[in-house]
Length: 608
Image (cartoon, rainbow, N blue to C red; front, side, top):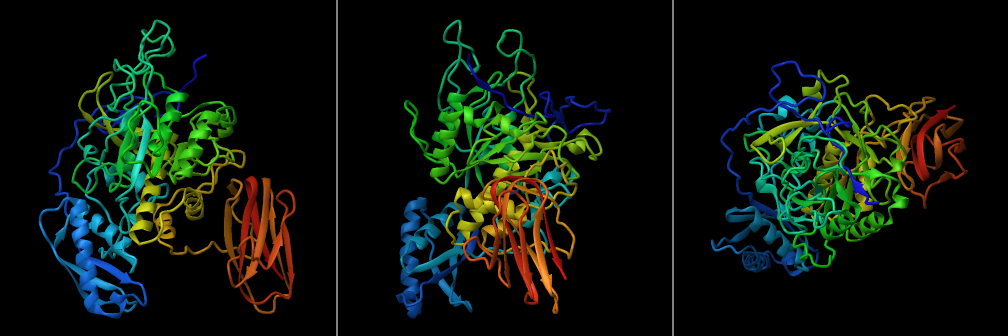
């Protein structure tokens, strides 16, 4: 039997869409269309006239300021050739910072491609320790001027249930990062089109024979046209089993990742400096597993027979799609994901909308993915969200619970007003883990751009996952113990700080008070601090409750690692115990590490 993936979207059960004009009362799962608010677009803007370049100690430019100019001009010549720039410019060192880095000024403002080409050339110079833009920082959070952002996009803001985007945007907008969106394709929405890269259509089934399902709906098979012709279903598609309008799902997901932002119109995206590569894998009623697996490999830079090489391999892949059955029964998808991760591509997937254990769905239960559950406005688990130990963390997916109605509870993004074939641009609200996943994919883009922009190595998928877990905020409303959805709420600001190498303050344990229950997968870790007063006779450190298997590590004065902890407990199960007599006064640090998947585990520290 042919197996297809069905894209989970919009209110979880039915493909429901709400649009911003909601003057009349709106029943749940209803559709409304609004004419887009069109304001003059802000100038795209050039980037910077200043850079920071540090030369390695002992190098010629570090010893002799005169050699700095030679180094800079050589990088300019190479960078101009790469960027195909005809208008000349020159660089000169203005001064040196207290740490020995040169503040470098350009004779004219550099366009983004020029600046990136120049930075690349400088970083390839063996004398250069690091090179970065001398960007502006602000006293307040960065707030773009997109009109719907402060009204409807609670999910991006510093709200209880939001991702705290403004806290990240002062450091990173995702520039230089490619996010592949494997979905229904795209529409060239006016608030998205400039952030789209060429993609590919991998939907291979287009009714070539009587027994061949015409999933594609565009009259052809695989080709370079990743545009979305509509994924509606009707009576002429008996393999679908139901009738619905087109969802324009891929366009909505892409807008959540990287809608054009600070341009005075419509909505904002999570990482608006990033580029989206649309990869069409879903058509009428879904898409075949084989096509999706090929698309994963291609998006990550792999070779697919009969398909041209991907000129812009993705740093991040988002899959807001899924099908029933554990990933252990879907080895072709697991194999494709493993390939992508081996190339350094982070794979983010939705947990699913069945209100069930995500272990029964693929790719949500695959290894090496970041599986995302959904929460509503108040940070409560969404009624439809899948759950379980395979879920890494949660992000806004929307829900009507405590939201003030469907309008405020939705996730608003770019879409289309056509009921079947494409119509006018629209701004649409949807709910689902399909909406949660691209928030996290966008945060990954912010993290990678921040790390590389600061002269640090690109983050590995394993590092990305751990930073997302470490930076997640505690759920404002703890999920039920039987429905865990990962380490906490995704937090863009905190994640970007970790990507920059800046430590986050650890949560403190209060004497005798058990922590909020924690969840995670094998290899995940959660750290705490505990202040031990002078004169303490003993401390009793424990993990308790929940399911799975964890180990516990502790050290005085420094955060422990698995290899160098002063004290450790590695019993089977969750009941770990460390007792220290006559402990030194001061700050102690604890680390809980998953030996296997774990849920509902508490941590307590008692000083006597």
